[in-house]
Amino acid sequence: MLTLYGQELGSRMLLGTARYPSPAILADAVRQAGTEVVTVSLRRETAGGRQGGAFFELIRELGVRVLPNTAGCHTVSEAVLTAKMAREVFSTNWIKLEVIGHHDTLQPDVFGLVEAARILAGEGFDVFPYTTDDLVVAERLVEAGCKVLMPWCAPIGSAMGPQNIAALRTMRAHFPDMPLIVDAGIGRPSHATTVMELGYDAVLLNTAVAGAGNPALMAAAFAKAIDAGHAAFEAGMLEPRDMAVPSTPVIGKAVFS
Ligand SMILES: CC(=O)[C@@H](O)[C@H](O)COP(=O)(O)O
Image 1 (tube, rainbow, N blue to C red):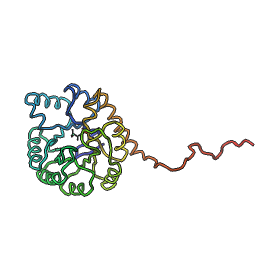
Image 2 (spheres, protein in one colour; image 1 turned 120 degrees about the vertical axis):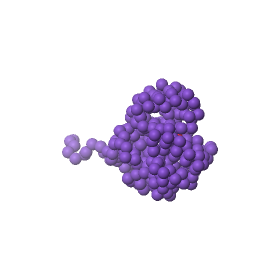
Image 3 (cartoon, helix red, strand yellow; image 1 turned 135 degrees about the vertical axis):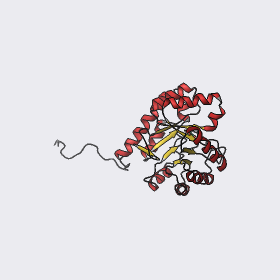
Image 4 (cartoon, helix red, strand yellow; image 1 turned 90 degrees about the vertical axis):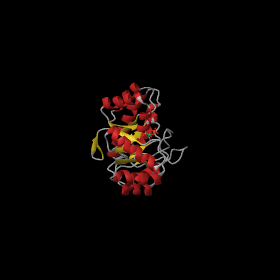
């Protein structure tokens, strides 16, 4: 079981709801993944007017938990205001906090992120910060009140997969008891397995599923890959060795002379 801010979850896959070919395909992907948490951009959906209403209805029908996000916010004040509006609209204290600092890479503005996290945690929000793998920033986020950390593994939407394996491993070792979710940049199920094998607690992804030829099938593939990586980590994997080690014992073998 994964526990995030006191909420127990059976699925370790958090799914974004943007860029699907149709609402029906999104719904199918959510069901196939067995995901229990979906991220929703308040800005995009409220900008959709009547379409936004239908979208919220669809999310309600799916019976999943909503993690509203502050996607598209570039300043602390924008992010805080968006979080407060999301709390009203979705009746949840959960907020995926994004404060974007760079247009090309969508890299988080970690200074603004920490400031916004402190404000929102102080106002009772359960903050899920989209951050880098920087340990000092991570420490500041924890001091600010975050009880979950969500480092990127590559730029949002890039599908590059983990570019920072050593840093992700260090972060896991540094925060052994903190729920850690890799958020953004995952492109393939094998990428998700890789980060789960590092001991990450969950993966948040969107583009790789929404942009697949068959999003529902891809969602199912990701769900299996995430579970496989988690099971492998729990099982305890061998460290690679330089030399061969016979897998069949030599003691007791027949001797021909
Ligand atoms: C939906 C959402 O929250 C995204 O901003 C998230 O960061 C996922 O990134 P990918 O689209 O790269 O999977």
